[in-house]
Length: 352
Image (cartoon, rainbow, N blue to C red; front, side):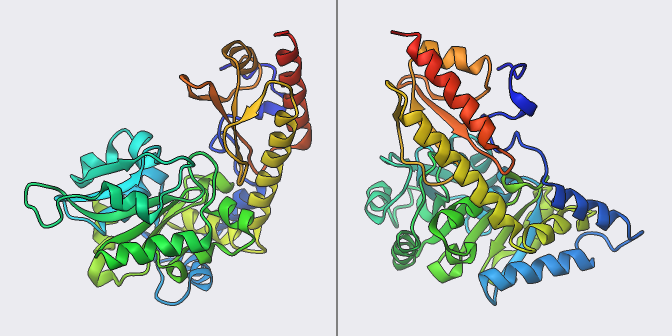
């Protein structure tokens, strides 16, 4: 995918393609100006970030900073599982299709995937995937894992999450939330991201900072006591413990100060909605899913997809159906969106 014709180097490929927010970069630089500081999280920035996250998620919150989403998911799930136990997840879940088998390799646990019409699990769908409880010949389902917002841009309501948590706990299972885009989901619903934690019955959250303007900054957030999880040791053994932790933690301090996380997510969501409205107004273009966060999924003719990708990089989501994915970021501009939509309209018109 060429970026030669994209204004300012911005794309609709992924919110991972965007840069680091200026306030986050400034926080990293400020953490570097203090000379030496204790390593491995025994520094004031890490303590401050812990405190800020606890303000959102509530007392009893434990925080373990990490480098990337896959590592965070693996570490978080490992705190809930033994190798003979399984994770129930949506068929399109990131842990199932975009992590190169890392959860299964490093956890030794099977993923039980479930087809979903909109990327979201329900208690009924989870129940349909579980068999052989108590039978030594079958893996034992132990964790339900959901993604907020989902891989197709839809958003679980707080009540939907709580219903899954209630179901899981009633069946002696845990609920894990992959929150790579948790900020976008919270902004979409007009709630604090803490609403997706223990208040909704979630046991472990993989909290994403990178897609919201940070640099290799993620966190495992658990509401179970360290004595029950061993997360300090799991994180280290999984190579997710940063020696210079202050540079990770300082980014969370920046994101959680003056609601930067919310400003970034609200803007990205607004740009995605603007793009969704513009694209759906183009004759022949159909949205595959409702625009609820910062992703737009549309069905395009192959020729249009190829021509548009040559100028505006983005991903073909499903080759069989022609669904493409466009992601907005904290730095996406109205001009980016309008120029993209205008070019889409031109290419669609040329098909006639």
